Image (tube, rainbow, N blue to C red; front, side, top):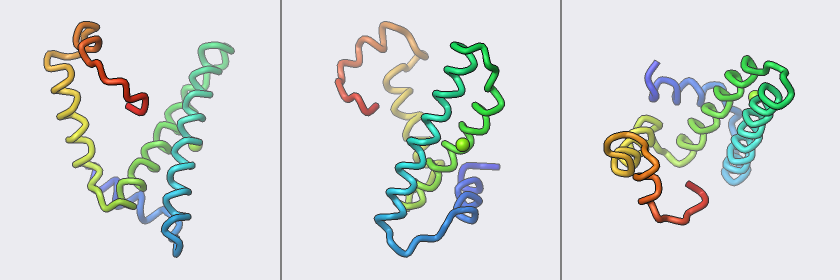
Length: 112
Ligand SMILES: [Mg+2]
């Protein structure tokens, strides 16, 4: 399944909202909740010795669903967003990650 197919599938499984503000608030809060679930599964697996890797996989998928829905809300193609991210990463780390290229990046945008 390619990103566009996935995005289309996600839309089919999403609640339909009449209120657009309520819709984006739902997707925005939803992705934060799923990211928190991802963090919780990692914490339980490694700090508590309680293997939650199955839940981790499921919640990574749930997080992707919200990514697709946020893209759809703004009329963005998920594959295009992925391509833009690849372009940014190639520019930042042209030969792959290194501490040197990471340190060279002097931006202080905590949202990245
Ligand atoms: Mg979940």
